[in-house]
Amino acid sequence: MILLGSTGSIGVNTLNIARKFNLKVEVLVAGRNIELLNQQIKEFKPKKVVIDREQDVSLVNHNNVSFGETAILQAIEQSKTSTVVNALVGFLGLKPTLKAIECGKNIALANKESLVVAGKFIDQTKLKPIDSEHFGLWYLLQNKKIDSMLITASGGSFRDYPLEKLQNVSIKEALAHPNWSMGNKITIDSATMTNKMFELMEAAWLFDIRKLDAIIETKSLIHAFINFTDGSTTAHIANASMQLPIAYAILGACDEQILKPVDLVEVANLEFKKIETSRYPIWEIKDEILNNLDLGVVLNAANEVAVAKFLNSEIGFLDVSKITLNAINKFNNVKPTSIEEIFEIDKEVRNYCGA
Ligand SMILES: NC(=O)C1=CN([C@@H]2O[C@H](COP(=O)(O)OP(=O)(O)OC[C@H]3O[C@@H](n4cnc5c(N)ncnc54)[C@H](OP(=O)(O)O)[C@@H]3O)[C@@H](O)[C@H]2O)C=CC1
Ligand SMILES: CC(=O)[C@@H](O)[C@H](O)COP(=O)(O)O
Ligand SMILES: [Mn+2]
Image (cartoon, rainbow, N blue to C red; front, top):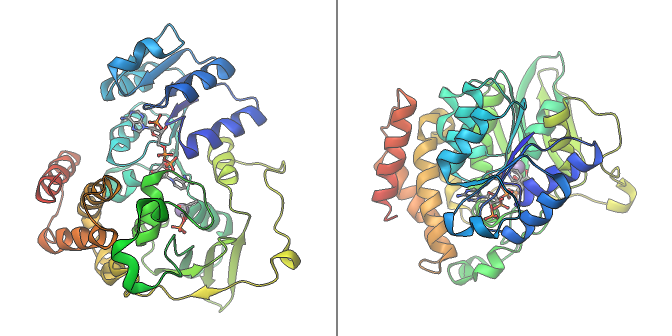
């Protein structure tokens, strides 16, 4: 496989699956965590390595190292391997997804931003999502008439925090997710509920359905529900680990045990809550977004700028949602008709948001 984002949370979990199933790793792509990358090179012996910055090349223990976005695209083009795992974070992941499609590769897609911003230009024929909720929905699909789909949210770092203190929370507090160990950007997206908005859009593209919603399930043990027209509901239950979705996205099917099953007696009880706009202002635009998926590129660009500013101590936590809502308000007429326009709109929104 080609693994993009090997040093991140999904990347490391992907290598755990590669180790367990003896899968070949031909290319490793990472950013700036060269220490971890060198450990991965030692164990998985890739033929090629790509990193973010030229200045780090000499620190990498490999004789075939290149750097930068173009090198990532070249590595995909030149490799004979048929599977690309895209675990890059943010808009940066879009071009590699498009390149992998162009090259006819199978794509295990963790980079949900690719679908959020450009779902209508992405050929899904060879694409499998790596996202716990969408894996859950896929797992539950049966030959029965579906009424609606429901995914769960943990509620993020501030689920139980006093509302009046939200503006002054620290970065450290915002990065303390209650249930999942993930990269910084998605952890903030989870705290603002933007991650769930992304996931509704992701589900809309993947399953071609608009009757979609999300609720909070505080333990992240149930990931998805399907409501059937006959009035029955099925739920996907699994412990909170990305290894199961990753294994299925890469292997297609899997009968070996990947996770310990959930012990319901030990769990004892589950708690469900509504997603309130007072705590998660972004939820005000849920219907607008689901009725107009073209807004994904706006939502994503504004959110990436805002999250970066928050993580750089330039703005407060509540300002993240304010910036994204303001951008949606300003750019609510976008109608991209080509992938090139996606890149143009992304740039324009970033400028507007003060990137
Ligand atoms: N973590 C999770 O459980 C889940 C994640 N996702 C999605 O998966 C994607 C990855 O998330 P996650 O693993 O948490 O993110 P992380 O931040 O943990 O990892 C991101 C990876 O991308 C690499 N990277 C960043 N910038 C560059 C660059 N310019 N060039 C090359 N590599 C780069 C990082 O390298 P380095 O660290 O070396 O700088 C790292 O390997 C996101 O789209 C997220 O929304 C979806 C569902 C669950
Ligand atoms: C593990 C995974 O799939 C994440 O996308 C997760 O859903 C994030 O947690 P939240 O439910 O808090 O957004
Ligand atoms: Mn998810």
